[in-house]
Length: 485
Image (tube, rainbow, N blue to C red; front, top):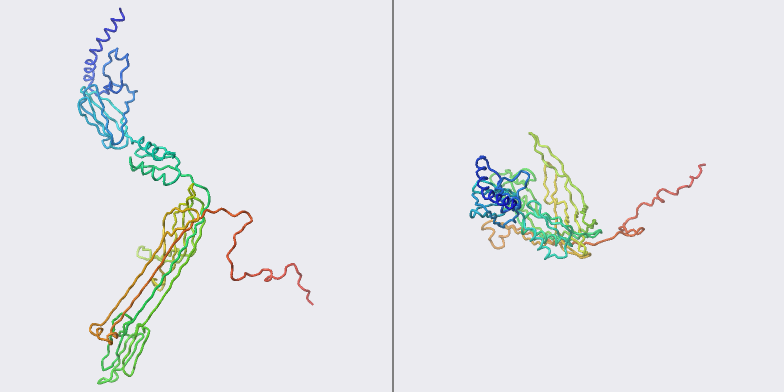
């Protein structure tokens, strides 16, 4: 009987408790973290029986945690009316009160924020809101597409981390692309098992460059013929001009006997004819030229699986560079490489496929495009270079680069009216025609090789001339010289 009376008294106090609790909070004059979380944290039976009011959470308790995915929404219900809501970082998540007892939360970006709710009594409830990526969807998709691969999916900050071991690099690339549907920041820790061994790469450079040139032009000059000095020229080839060097001198006849004229010939061209008695000369440019350039380079290089190897057969030439200083110009000499260069990195897959990152290059000194500075000739570089990434089986060949170039350049000049005359008009015309044809092909052939057994040595190149025979050159050893008489 006494126990029943005690329970009845406790229930009566519980009915009056919330009002007293609300008055006590207002009288305190400060905001409290009230346990509005009857919605989020259920009371114990003892608290319900004792009629404990909505009270401030102790400092030792941890706020409840809410989790939501990026791009998803969550509705939070409250048993008491809410009047205000706040999120510490609106870029990560946003919250809005849709009615006094419901809050809509939306995740924008991965991260962690604090969600604070205030009820009509200015009591607040705090939540730890975690916005994460939907890595479960990524994990399920990877498991469905690659059921035999060992791929782990985890989240680190705003990134998805892929870990494990896959059968090939192509599978790893596809897994990364699939994870990027959730976020562009993907950390790829997937490993690809590689076979051990060495790869011998054989590269062939083959180039044929043909050039055909035709030139024709005439310069006519008079040093006094018909009492008239002058020049008839299209100015295309070695024009004749007045000057002192390489000069041709003539005498003007007529009313001024003994008067001389001088012309300078900068280029005698192919044919030069001068009649002193007529004071008349002519230079003719008539030339046909054919050039053929052939290049065949076959470098070979051995590299360990997964390691880069490089090879250079050529040299370096000095190249002056002007360094600007405080009022003075200093010339620094740097060296540039030329010749046959090969650089590649092989990767052997488990199925025997060889993945190559190869960069072959062939360069040569080009004096036709050289520069002359302060009396020094600096050649240009003629370069053929390619860089690519391919996959081949052992012993297969592939043409990684090729070029077919045909060029025609024609320059024609003539003197108006005179150049249009029939037959004689050719004396007042000049023409230059240049045709070039270039064919280039670069092929690579990788091979998986093994070292030779002990005692087996590969053959050396055949030398056309014998070396010095040290035995014959030094004479017999251990023989005493003959006695002197």
